[in-house]
Length: 203
Image (tube, helix red, strand yellow):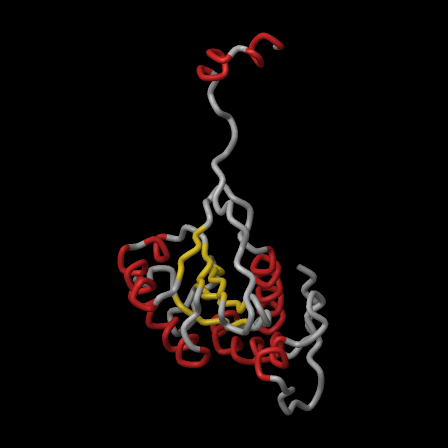
């Protein structure tokens, strides 16, 4: 073993068992809300009467605010881009950096050219790399948990519950920042009858 370790030729011939890595550069640190945005999908959900079986999860890295957008697995890249413009850009402006995994929608020529036109930098992680940002994984778990609770009697209309769940999440205190995403984004609390009981996200 010592010989194999020290032999240059052996090292060159030895197959590399390590998995490929993805993002090696440190993630950008945003200075304001919706400057750095994280995209992810929750897939494998029951088909709704509206034809949705997937959620496009969009998170602001600064405030942790999230948008939960119903869509479907077979949605074309152009459709996903339209959702991004309608729900994110129209409300928050154009992000400087967009972080995602290697979903074909985010690696397509159309998506790359669109982001280039917008002046948005794409940061795409490898399939072998751990989650680009752990908060997406934890948030996805919370969304699925809340959907199961809200739709225990009828899961064919889970997409109709997303606006209420989104509002509840954004008005729950985030453990990592000690404040609600809504407050960090808008500098105020919305009018609400009571504080929503949403599990804290610790990532």
